[in-house]
Amino acid sequence: MPLALFKPRPYRHQAHYEGVLGTTLTLQVRARGSQQARAAEAAVLAEIDRLERIFSSFSPESEFARWQAQGVAQLSPELQALLRAAEGWMAHTHGAFNPAAAAIQALYRQNPEPAEGELEALRRALQGPLWRLEGRTAHKLTALPLTLNALAKGHIADRAAQAAVAQGAEEVLLNLGGEIRHIGSQPVRVAVANPWAGADNALPLARLTICSQGVATSGRSQRGAHLFDPRTARPATQVVQATVVAPDAATADVLATAFCVLEPMLSLALAEVFGVGCLLVEANGRTHTNPRFAQEETEVTR
Image (cartoon, rainbow, N blue to C red):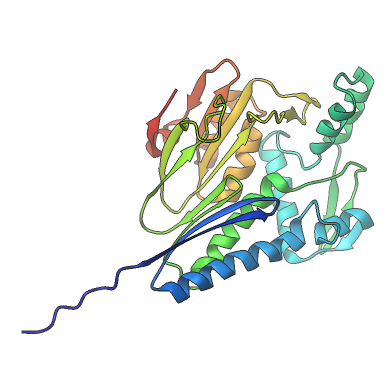
């Protein structure tokens, strides 16, 4: 009688880091063994570090920061690609995503009630061209500081998860400061924070089942972060939180940011155009979801 062949049980590995991209990183890996799992973890950290040196808005040594300081420079293919993606998302979201939007927060930090003239000047600056790409060369066309954080963090989560798979991971679940990326064949459950909760350990607003997808949540937290509309240079007050489920974390990241600014019905329409699920929470407590989000939702607390 032939011997039965048993497939080895997969090795499961978890890791948690603080201070990665200025936030937390939680990683779960399933691999054939501990060696492959550790290699996958190392690949995740190395890829995040590598991309931080390109895209960071905080490190003066990053390629992105050096280009801003110089005003004109030849860029790496990766930074060129992200700037082109940002151009596309600015158009697709009707200006709700804007890499210069941090200037609004800076203005309100200096003066909680800025004059109409200041607001109008800033609004015009935000609507003007921010940069021009000519082959490998990029020209910065605005005096406003730029940040790609609302797109870059999701992109980095995607690339880091892919790096883990390239090193032998069979499944990866990565949470980079709220940007979630899963790659694998087995569905996993993730939680959506409740914007009205007074504590980090409060019940989630919803629980989702995802498989090889990205999830991002943006909005006003209990810690007092405010939202601003780049189209008006004023606070965005209607939507307090937006969650997006997309094929990748970069798409989820940028659309979650935009959906906090846009009118809910426009966000729901754009979600259908881009084939993503979304959950929107208004300041009055009303929630909106589209059919694609309902397919992922397994439990909800309203």
